[in-house]
Amino acid sequence: MRDNPVAADPLGEALHFLHLVGRFYCRSELTAPWGMALHPMPDHLWFHVVTSGQCLLEVGQETMTLRTGELALVPHGEGHVLRSAAGVPAPRIDRLHHDYESDRYAILRHGGGGTPATLVCGAVRIEHPAARHLVDLLPRIVHLEPGEGLREDWMHSTLRLLAAEARELRPGGETVITRLSDLLVIQAIRTWIDNAPAAGTGWLGALRDPVVGRAITLIHQDPARPWTVAALADELAMSRSAFAARFTELVDEPAMRYVTRWRMYLAREWLREDGATVAALAARLGYQSEAAFSRAFKRVVGISPGAARRVAPAG
Image: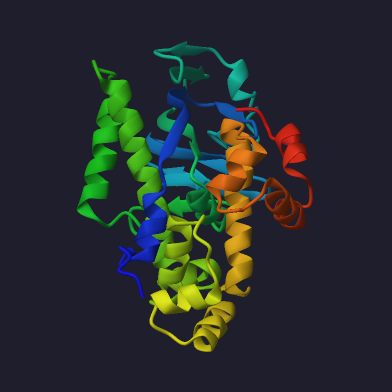
């Protein structure tokens, strides 16, 4: 068994990949009646923090009230609506006037002059495939209330600081708001993992297992290594048969299928993000030839790497 520096906390390792790339942040000063529709943004996560007042959040058929100090994530890039009350017209947010402080930070003032509310909202992209795998498991809405997920003192402090910055944008305020927002998004995901029953099953549940979680981390850290069931079992000081059975039971697929699927997940992301060549991807993921890589890619993804590049969404 090699002396490999494997994370003692595989779930923490997955959270480590939650590096957010902010596409749009907005401080909204709203007065009732008001409404706005946020258009779909595939592969992005929307967040909304109510710093004063309240509003309705509607995602499909799901509707909830967000009050001061509450945070909601819409993690799958779905279009959704925010409004002061049910039935209030909600024009698309990109058709409302914004005062842009920078190319990704804006102030929105909107409404009919009644009861005020202020929000900090944003759309962020999560780049790393491990983090996307985690976000894919989140529910349609992640809603944190002060009485539930926001008990930690630092969370209260972060929300108060965010609210203070949102009231008056001082020099450097854009940077403060965007960094605080990113921290709140990551903490919201951590809190959901800690408290949601669904987070204890499937892939997330497997990450918590001391053996399978370490195996998954090894695969994620070094996807190009010529992994075999025997090599993984050796790293974990287990018999091949015992490891194989445990991995399949918890992850619901054999270890080598997971290795291949993970490599193709990475390849699909790299094709989308940096336009890597097939030869470069094959070498980067440990394949001895372009042909072997292309066969594996088509078997897992269903189309060739070239076709995947052509259909990849822009930006």
